[in-house]
Amino acid sequence: MDVCEVCGNTYDQSFEIHTRDGAKHTFDSFECAIHQLAPICEHCRCRVIGHGVEVDGHFFCCAHCSRQSSVGSEKARDKVSTG
Image 1 (cartoon, rainbow, N blue to C red):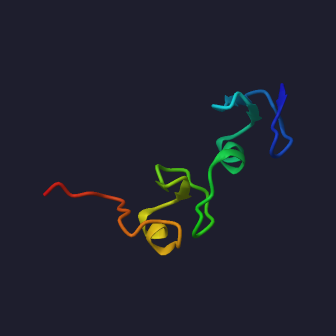
Image 2: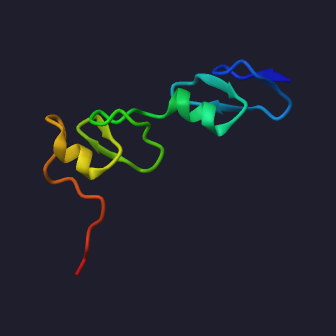
């Protein structure tokens, strides 16, 4: 049994996530994995667990936060209508 690197729980159904930079992480739940690995919105500070919005290397949870931020983009949109 492995130990979760976030909460320290020993769990028989823990899992590993390997990141692009080759790091290996062990978690006992998706909640702990999100807490450790998900980017943080640069405007509202929530964890970005959906698609989010990236503008020039800056991460936001949604287009609204991107538009409100000084480093975001006024052009950011969550949904585009093709008319």
